[in-house]
Length: 433
Image 1 (cartoon, rainbow, N blue to C red):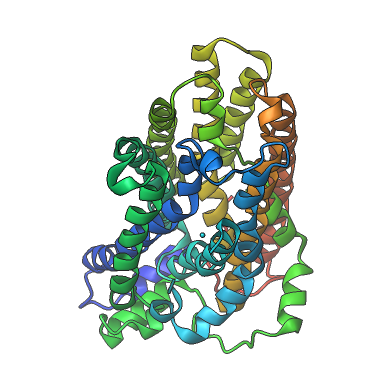
Image 2: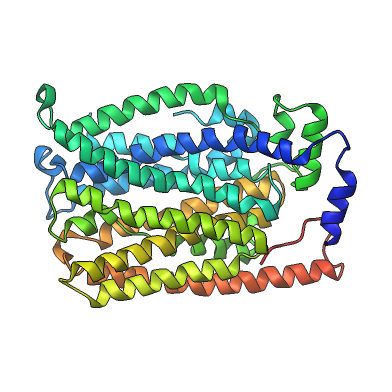
């Protein structure tokens, strides 16, 4: 047992049941954030499902000028630009207040991106203050799995809604937006009352419990460091923060479109996106458990990247043979979605204090979401069904991600060694590699 763990054991008040309080925190913090992001993600990606159910024809979108791709991309403009400002403001307005959310197709997508900018990075930012490094990965991954649940549920829901074509004189793609939009409104209203704030402001804990959470996580939550332009510039002066953005950026793809080009009907297209996502979900949970148990991060990120590279190699070389192509798609999904939450948790939990974690979570997620823009213009209809350019670009990004991950690990190890020899401040939790 290392010195940090021994210190935690010595400081736990005798009248606090650690396991019971952790269960209480798990139940109060994670589920509501999970449900919120399922709704938010469905709202974001329902256009992908709508594109397979007649939206381009009904809105007369021009395939030659890539109008559908523009509609997909415009979401990411405010989503990326407002993530860092949103996280900085969340510290002052408190999470339960700050987590609040087509005229034309483009306008709707733009404002949707603006409204959702706070949700994903802000949730990771909030979760990071409730747990220690060696127990955080499972919680980060469970929250991350909201993306996978939404992907599977979105495909199944779209398959069911496809049968509503013509109901009340409306096409099925319109019903996707209507029904999922109503659900989001209801969830958004409930979220105001259910979202937990940071530990120091959690009124559902006793004063002693609040102090215990802050003490055991050593998160420097009560730090009064101001968030200004100087702090932001100082943050980006550390090369590890730049590398972390590139690590998360290293993968993006558009599964419904890829599967659709294999020649299936719209309904079967939606159903074929479910198995890769289900396999990714299972692998995510297994790797999160093992990562926390072993207190290691790099080997599991490396394994995920290896799966992505293997899957992309199949998709690049095999054409007109669906079983092999589908297996490649499954490998890509499993590798990317299992490595993603580990990259986020590993990086964010290596940071300390509100300033670094607020900027860090927003920076990493926002830069990674640039991949969403790249993906929409690399998988073009004219390149189907081989998508050679798209897969080649993604392969290059994944290899870049592998390189930056190795460099990030080396720099983190060097920082950890300097800390152990006394060159850095004592009293901080040990870095995980």
